[in-house]
Image 1: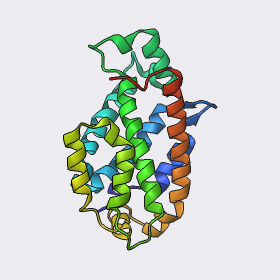
Image 2: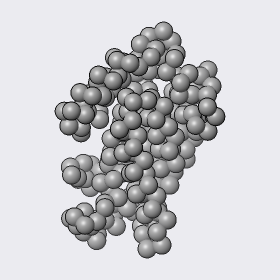
Image 3: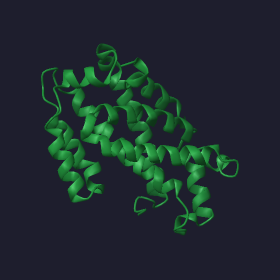
Length: 209
């Protein structure tokens, strides 16, 4: 497997550090670029989160298309401009419109899981099994938004997860370097997550169906 197919923790750390726009906003292009890397992690986890990977792919594609579109591109430069546009135009009430805010909310929830899982993973030893920390991270984050049948299937599949050392070898090209930069990646990921969380709270958007 080539380096470009592996999950690059250092790249995610750098992109998330750079995507914090002004003092209270997030650049959408950078957010989506970082999420392209994060989706590799979901894919490399195998069947455990295959269903998440396909959903993430569709959400990234929707938001990238809004950025490329001449009529909407400037409205989607940052998360703040996207929210303002969709609220001002009352698009969040339009059932025929695919909402960028609703789409990003799904990615935001996935980011919380990734952060929690990697944080707990970093606290394990190389020989420790990873299914317990994956299960606890999932139950506290994404599971709250999944139907029972999906939750059940995901938790069962987690028992097949390898040890911490084996998992990092599977998803990262350079495990030593990945472990070294993981704290920095977690710090910047949390900063981006917290900022998006605040934007959605301030605009009362967490309940979007």
